[in-house]
Length: 358
Image 1 (cartoon, rainbow, N blue to C red):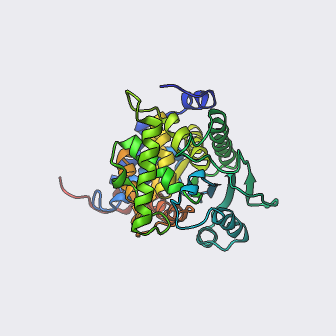
Image 2 (cartoon, rainbow, N blue to C red):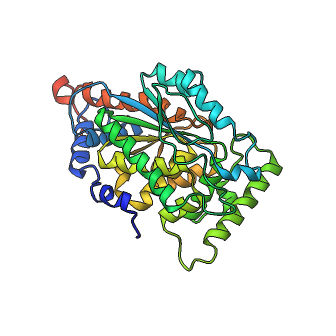
Image 3 (cartoon, helix red, strand yellow):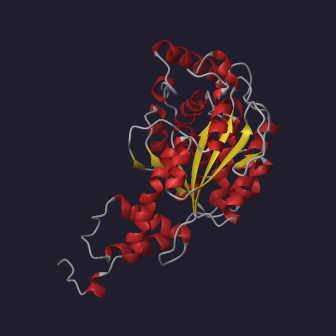
């Protein structure tokens, strides 16, 4: 696999959580005062988190959410029900504290940061804004690659830098969110190419397209995939998929997932868009999987295919398709609950409770 210089070193440093730590955590879970396996998915969540954190004992988690924002040139093709300027307007809404993700972040004590990777607007300084604009939106992926190689490298590096920031701030559990009108088109193109599924099977209505709008979106994606990859004798490499049909915020999230795994930080993907970035990261470095959680399963049809590709089970299924990191933040108290059960429940031995007969 061709490896960009910006990624080569970090990928070399990624190692999965120790299997022995996971096995030890599972043995501890089996010793707790409950029938074996009776906490269901919570037990797998707890074991994975214990292995990632490499610590024992109840300690509050330091939680954060990063929203990566960028515009998409493909919106010129009418693939979204909303105009392009909504990206910038929603970033302003995030900074004013009025969006769904702000409400949930406040409720669950999650530090929120918006990362401007490529919004087609300029913003004033704000304590919750990280300005790292590569360009004012990606190029129109129907007409040309969404990014040049240099732009892709810059966006990936932004994600890597944000992951280092999360590590420096000792953030244990990080939600991955996004904002970008048109980005379900990019995510659908990525998903179809990575998974080998038909475009129609991985493409939904985005932020509310009608039947005619979805048909137009399907047509645009098929033409774009044929343009960029139709003559290739073998499947394209993940970085080439990202460069040709991705987006600046998706590239930055890809870098973030790789960087978070390098620093052994747990990442909760939100919905379809953030999971498409995680899937590209997984295609580049499969060892990241042990650091990934899926906050929920989106209503976007491609999301289920991505979760299957990653081999990751969603924590929640609430019929959501908002983005912003909302589903990821909603899953945080579930993960915290799993850890508290692991740390605070009595064992059969300590409680003097008889175990099941074998």
